[in-house]
Amino acid sequence: DAETFAMIGKGLIVIGAVRIGKIGGSAMDAIARQPEATAKIQTAMIIAAALIEGIGFAALLHNKTIKSKLQGLLAVLIF
Image (cartoon, rainbow, N blue to C red; front, side, top):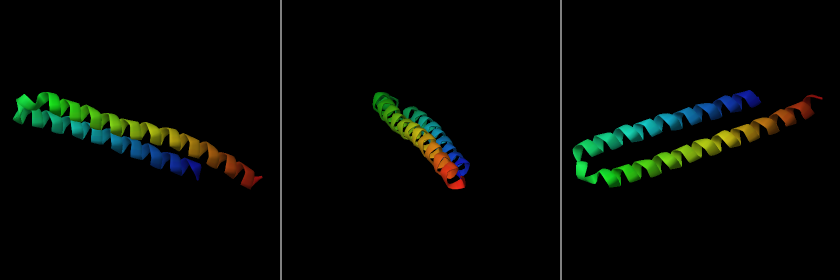
């Protein structure tokens, strides 16, 4: 069912968002331990968060594409 695939995709996107929060928290811990490395830690954190966000956005678009294709296919098979 197309809706099932959509829900799975949305769940994966939420997991990605939670991981971005984990990256931010870990970066703050690292900065607290080594304040002199703040610039390097922030740069790495922003790059990692951007990559995860990009993957989540791609998953969202892919999910919508698959959902529309599956709905079209199901409509053809039903009739």
